[in-house]
Image 1: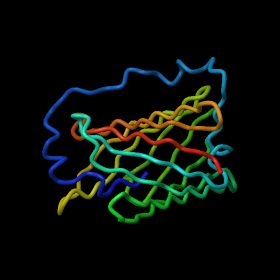
Image 2: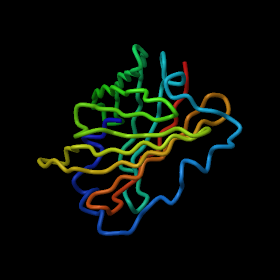
Image 3: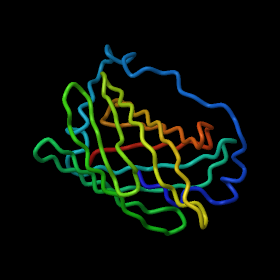
Image 4: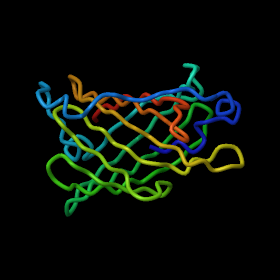
Length: 178
């Protein structure tokens, strides 16, 4: 997801050191009642609604994303069109290799290196770094995304955002097919 201006400089400045980590293991979801197949879920049109909260729980930004997903030759491409509550618009295109056994590897324009992820049962864990524009600076921040397939094809995402290993905020997104 594109978050280049999600962080207002004041919000980032408020993100003083705090310990934050996720202790969930994706293997814990092996016996889930629903099975997520990422390329099947995202093929076609998907709409998402989300928000960014700083580490104190203050909502700093809200957004909508229209996503078009295509699958070709073992690659899932996600064309994401963001519209933020302040009227700003942005685009991100993910190119995600389907590696098999629930494993994925992806790239996007502002993702140095690769994002890596794994689906087990109804859960997907996706980890990557982003070169994030914050005011006049660019920060390298980490994302630890956890997505869960719920009833009625709702996919919930909770992303833990870190800088230097310190949690500076969280992003919550609800995806809906159609």
